[in-house]
Length: 225
Ligand SMILES: Nc1ncnc2c1ncn2[C@@H]1O[C@H](COP(=O)(O)OS(=O)(=O)O)[C@@H](OP(=O)(O)O)[C@H]1O
Ligand SMILES: Nc1ncnc2c1ncn2[C@@H]1O[C@H](COP(=O)(O)OP(=O)(O)O)[C@@H](O)[C@H]1O
Image 1 (tube, rainbow, N blue to C red):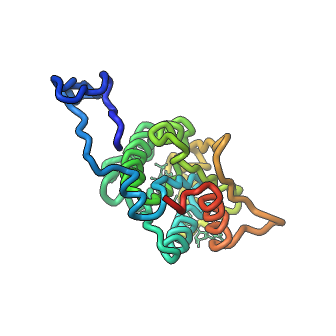
Image 2: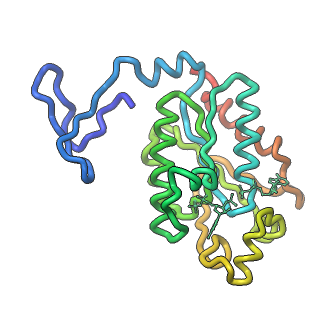
């Protein structure tokens, strides 16, 4: 992040630094390093960005994240996967599934993803991220088309039939409350960059889904510095 992110004006060089107040942090100063994002991108031969995969539980988010990660890795690109389920084992272990905790979950992951993108890495984030407002807030953190939203547009019926963790069954019998798609909302993206859909009643294979995203990255210049 080479630009100044404070509330106040940019600190003039060799003049008294201008302190900022951000949230509960008072008297803080943005420090710029001489090696920046463009230097790291040149080193890596790619553009740092965030591929944000959203969709219902069981829609294939993690499957796509892993398949895309593999394809990019074998083509020599540096990637990192941020998976909602995994992050809830650590960074986000204090968060529940109520709306405000989901919002905080997405905010934190958005900020982490922004750091990865700034590092020049192709960051693949796969989270249900059910609220449009929370996803849009992440998009706003990543200007210049660095936020690529991928919607897993699979019907609830398919996701529920897969039910690899048995969670839909628990939700249907009331043993899990507030389960996305059952008794908690999911707001689909309106203008996302990529939509993964069934074709002729068939779900694309993991490799096909990954190729769809890969083509987008290639066509839009992310796979070169
Ligand atoms: N109530 C409820 N609703 C939805 N999902 C639930 C819930 N309780 C547990 N799980 C499990 O948590 C995984 C989703 O975590 P996320 O961090 O991606 O969710 S969110 O973005 O904060 O909505 C999700 O993983 P995926 O199935 O991979 O989506 C579930 O395994
Ligand atoms: N394209 C696909 N075709 C067939 N099965 C899939 C596909 N994508 C995912 N699956 C299967 O569906 C289940 C849920 O996938 P997963 O990636 O865990 O979804 P999510 O991360 O959205 O919860 C898994 O059992 C997975 O193997």
